[in-house]
Image (cartoon, rainbow, N blue to C red; front, side):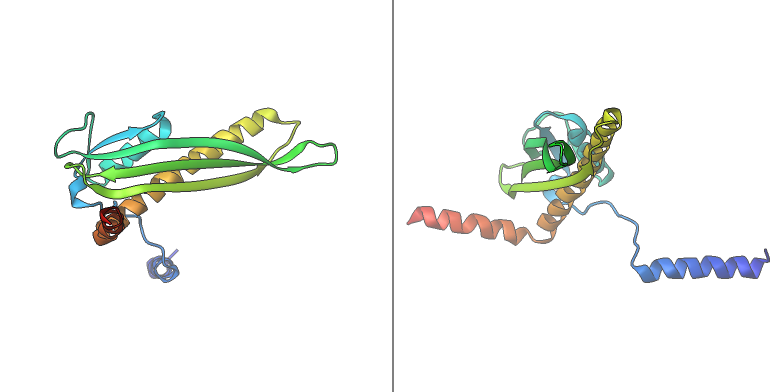
Length: 182
């Protein structure tokens, strides 16, 4: 292949990527008070590991212990469940849904609320084959890994929103304080 043809193909490929809106994912722009974070996830597991890894990639120092000047990212609820969706004529399940429910909140190093309690629910559906139960177990594990990856991104998107719009958190806290004063 001639050099001008290779250059033309490379440039047309780059132009196509730019035109479709594809952008490489950058690290998250988190609130400035989250430079040092203590992360607590109920049950730990892959959510805690993946969230810590992503926070470090965003320039955050994940601390082993909380304390003054260290923000607290708490995930008190992180649970998977499986629901039956459809049944065949022999009353056997043919489709399931794997659901992931997470609740979290963030406080800065002084105990002030950065992100109020948030709930995120995600789900994936899959077909069940009674003749291949080993494949089904592997499929559920893969769906759970996928949901965990998506959950980490959803949490980071909410943290980025808190960095861009800190007045939204203050606006939520102010009416509650005003209503108790009456």
